[in-house]
Amino acid sequence: MAVIRFREAIGILRDSYLILVLRLFVGATFIFSAVTKLPLQSQFVEIVQSYHLLPDPLATAYGIALPWIELLIGVYLLLGVLLKPSAFTTILIGISFLIANVSAIVRGEQYCGSCFGESISLPVSQALTLDFLLMIAALLLLLAGGGKQLFGVDNWFTYKQHTKATHLNILNT
Amino acid sequence: MWTREYVITVLVITIATLTIGFFVWNSGTQQLSPGTYNFTCEGWCHGAESPLVIIDAYPDFECPICVNKQKLIMQALDIYPDEVRLDYHHYPYNDFSYKLAEALEAAGEQGKFWELHDKIFLQAVPGDMSDLLAAAEDVGLDMVLFNDSLNSGKFTDKVLADREQAISDGARPMSVYINGNEYRKYPGTPADLCSAIDEELERIEANGGN
Image (cartoon, rainbow over all chains, first blue to last red; front, side, top):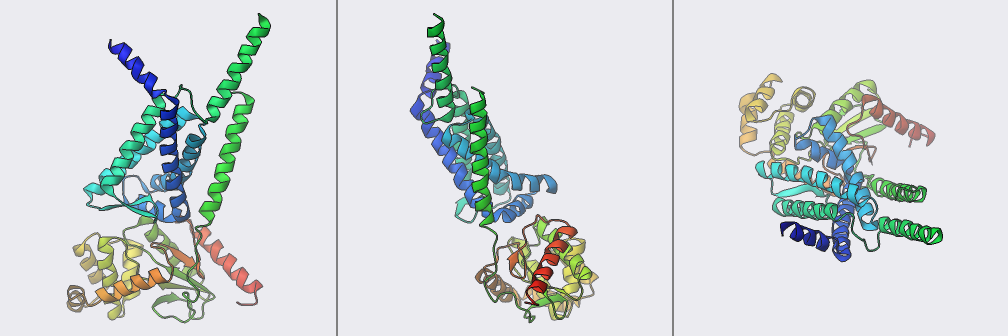
């Protein structure tokens, strides 16, 4: 019974509209986050260092790489490319955001100064909620990764390959 | 699915995204408002008397990169004693930085702004009041006068006004500008800063000294 329910749940997750909504949500959030961080990258690196969660060279590397990774993952998810690796990376990034925001709360900070550059001063509690939502969405995408996508490059290639294989089978028979 | 066409598609999307990202990143290279960097010293200046290159610094004490940048700038002042001047601007960002900025002003009142500046940036940034008082004592400040200035909040308004001025200058917190153009290294190496200064000197020479 439990196995059947799990299969039903996975079946719902593989609903192409749900996958599309999740892709749009995570993708758009990441692209917005990257676009607001990139022009102020030096400030972002400095803010990451000021958290004192990583040694300085690692904090610098993280601060430089993160906006670019967010941009790539955002575009991949919007276009439906490399869905599973992108969802997995989103979960890793979400964990790092979670740690940073929890440390900000411990230090008594009110706002997430590095979430969306200078464009939005997001209260830390809301930033934490957003982190959780991103991670849940990414987890659902990871579980549903094999499902049919709407407007997805991956899906288009799978469909093309499938059609080609069917044609070959027909020719062979 | 990993056909040649798919790999090429992923590569094209990646390269296109990174190219767009580069333009977004580059749009952030910032300049100070015209007239902000001034060849006549109006605040806390250190270095060449008739400079060709002015480095405007807006550091925050609690930001490690700012501290490292400030160390590099001090090294550059030694390398270019006749060409480069540092204009220091208060732009505190974190809580204790406001107190440190006031402490610098209080040291400046006794003619020892740069002594305390060097002590803070080149040796160790005070983490609390006791560290700050120890640093002030080390540089030979009159501690009674220093404590009075700090406790009375004599320079609070000055620091806040400087911060407002920095914002209206178009400066970003924790930034460094070379003749008004943002220096974007994290914090970079002495060679990076020297090559940026050399480029600026070459540009000035090519423009006939302007």
